[in-house]
Structure formats: structure tokens, C-alpha cells
Amino acid sequence: MELVIMAVIALLGLCILAWASRRRRRFHRQDAIHTGTIQLAGSLRRATAPLPELLDSVGDYAAYERAVFAAVRAAAQDTRQISSADEAVAVHDRLVAALGDLFAIIEVYPDLVADDATAARIRVVEDALEDAARRRAELTPLLRR
Image (cartoon, rainbow, N blue to C red; front, side, top):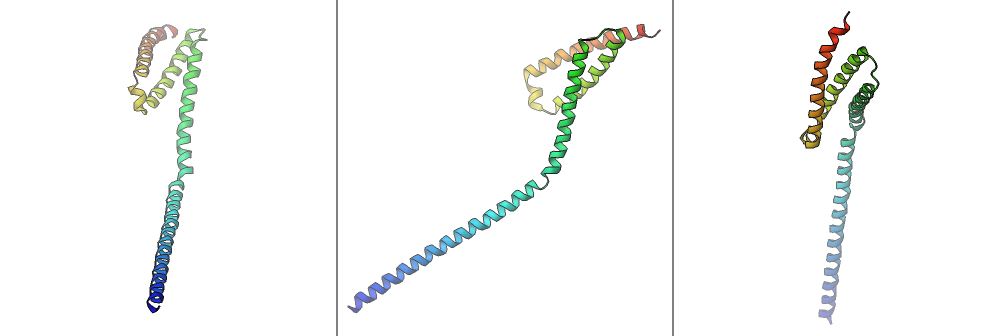
């Protein structure tokens, strides 16, 4: 009988040790999760701290791009309403300036520059601008009276 009691006590002791070990592992896991969460949250807060200023900077650049797009569209629209030589020269100058800014923006995007369709459109515009520059050069002396 003593042997049975000792076996039961030993078995009970092993169960208590197993339970305590499992509880300890669970506590360490929960502690690691808690610590990891705090560290991740800290890293995320550090990553987001400069975002307002970064968004302002990018927003300024994006606003510049939108302004360039608007200038190109306006100059393109103006080409349809030319009614005099002086207007033609002025529209040419506005269009060349706006397209210069647009081409600078396009160069920032390598995938866009590498696109065959975009490259073909750029070549058409560049060829037409060369022709326009020659014609403007021919027209300008005639306007000076």
C-alpha cells in the first residue's frame, strides 16, 4: 500500500511539474508576444513619425506634376485656337516650356521611358517640335516690323 501511495504521490508530483512547466512555457510565450508587439508598435511609430513631412514633400512634387500636366493641356488646347502669328509664337513658347517640364517628369519614371508606345509618342512630339521650331524661326523675323 505504501508503494501505491508513493507511486500516486510521484505521479501527482510529475503532473504538477508538467503543469508548471507548461504554464511557464505559456508565460514565456505570452511575454515574448507582448514584448514583440511593443517592439513592432515602436518600430511602426518610428516609421510613421516623418510621414506628415514626407507626404507634404511628395504632395508638393505631385502638385508640381499636376501643374505641369495642366500647363501642357492648356497649351495643347491653345494650339486649336490660334488666330494670329503673334498668338502662334506665344503658344509655341508656352508649349515648348510645358513639354520640357513634362519630359523632365517622364525621365523620372524609367518604366515609362522604356515603354515602346510612350517612346514612340515622345519621338512624334519631338519631331513635331523640331518642325515647329524651324517654322517659328522663319516666322519671327517677319513679325518684327
